[in-house]
Length: 294
Length: 332
Image (cartoon, rainbow over the protein chains, first blue to last red):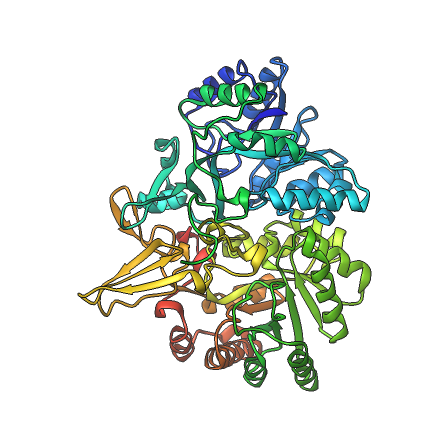
């Protein structure tokens, strides 16, 4: 099974981002995703910079994938998307149908990112006709759904594409036109001062009784918990999952990668370090909540 | 511009038509649509009667089949498409590719509208859906500003329908997992958001109330403080030591003042949210919008918002508050 570094969901200073990926190029990873997936206003690295970084990291022998925005609202964002799709060298992760359409028009293979809403074998097959090469299921697609989908693909006589499952990190739960970081800091989105850069792991949101709950990350809302599927590696293997996606965090990412690499190399089950991902077992995504009301 | 109104049952459908809806949208009584609430929606017999009622008056009925089936349940959604065609629906409203593909191949004559749950916000995404599944209309997610709506309208391969009034989803529809993060039940998979069976209200001795969703505290209200339905996005939470509506206030979308701009942009239909609401809501909202659209049609240059319209709409708004929401840049 391969280890893949998902796109960084947060906004970090340019030098920090470049240093992070130059280090990541030395880690025991098979694949690295680059690019901005949350907010087009985050321009510490522009499209050209991301592609240049991809060129630089390609020498590491790891596969480099250029990831794209989940929510596209403006013409300028479509222009940037077109430049990424037409980069001519690197595989592109489509997180919106706009990217799928651009790849399909040009006959370019793509990775279907977690926001594309593929829930069944027929939809997956249709996207394979469009050029889908690898699939990253969304957060709701747990073990049972994937097993069922795999069986349904076999029944249709279709081969499964490569599958990369989110195995570490805060789950992306929602996207909006509104910037929740700007709202929390009482600044207008159009004049936000890029304040999300002050929160390199997002802005914690707790309930009124102090229970940690969500993470605000610009226009994205995440679950607060860092989920961890390392203890489920045996199940993931049995399901035929090809790669594990690890979402970057500001500190300690090298250790996260090393732990997953050791867990893959070892047949012993590993203890859970992060939170249980309820979605994996078709339960509420947040760990420890009951499937039926109390 | 067509007025498309919600109907959660037969009386609401009849009321919507009586008060001026050009089309009503409805769902079957199961998880094939995004308002799969207990006690809501139509049996086949009711829908047959509803379609006859509408067609006899020259109005249309759209059937929402806008959830995302997993592989084991996909056949049930296909059967629902067959039922919609057999019942004589004027269109289905769908989001999921397998459902759209099945409909396009099996019932090519049955128009397919892309649901708001399809998350298409660009001409490129709309072109994909048009070329791939032959959609003839699309409903835009509630994320674009009015300027962006105008640009998408100009570039879209299909006519567009936009939300005009009703409860405001603030996330890109089809891409919000806040409900399933807490309850396991989601709009995409189960046709529900923050289902009522997980909601628990508790009243304290001092008259204050708390509301929880599957045990997670969504908000706390003082005695007599108005309290809304506890969807996660409308709760009050603590961010940086401040407690506030961190995502959105309980408020409804109201685009009445944008009617001329939406018309000039070439928007083909205005959609009213609220299949879960009753006859009183549907009647008042349909009547108000009918009047506003007719007045505009008769005299676009002299059109202006009438105070009575806004009063009528505010009475039916969540928390009695309305907002231009994402149409207005400052909301973002």
